[in-house]
Length: 64
Image 1 (tube, rainbow, N blue to C red):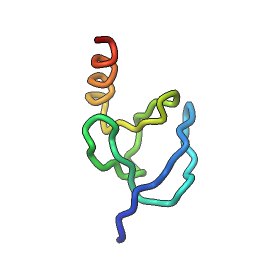
Image 2: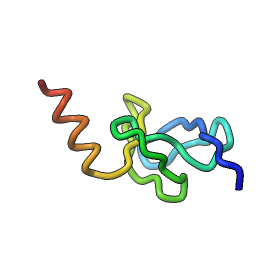
Image 3: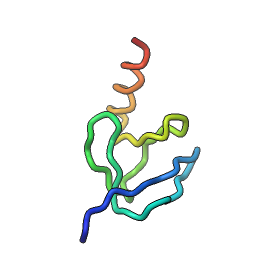
Image 4: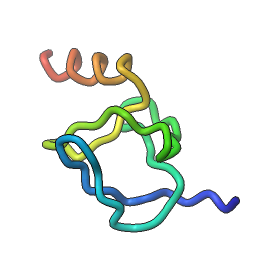
């Protein structure tokens, strides 16, 4: 399978695929997230996160 980064529009409980691909990149860790495993994102920032750990890290850093 050819690896290609997807471009998404993140919504409150779903996302739209704007450009086809098989993964997105975590905004905090840079890890690739297969679309089938994508569970964490921020609608306002339009960012994806690999896990709750990255979400916590992102928002902890924003408070400083």
